[in-house]
Length: 149
Image (cartoon, rainbow, N blue to C red):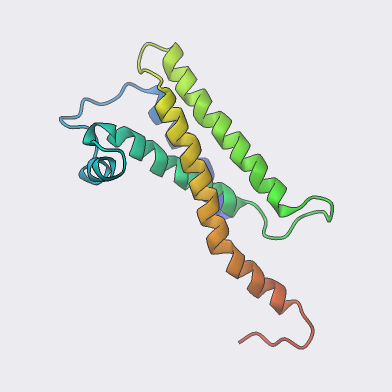
């Protein structure tokens, strides 16, 4: 339940931040994002791409955490839920950039849309890496003769 609340909070936050005027900042983003941009993308001027990637990574992680570890129906694998979340959040990220492009308050950017989508994918993959051991422990607990520690 906490993951779904955090996901809802992040969706509201990202929507508001995407559609309000950008604050005038003396330099491009936080020092951490400037450093990561210089390290990964070759220049601190790309710090906004790192910010997009990290924020949408959080969205992807909490979307993954909002999906049940066990499917609700036998014919609906858990993987399908993750694929739906990936698709929905990628469409959401592109839509937010499109809305910025249509409005005159901010400008949309295909690079930001790509960073959004890659962030969602990384967040979901990050969640799977964390969730797989948990799922194995839960599955082992269901076996007869197994006593949890």
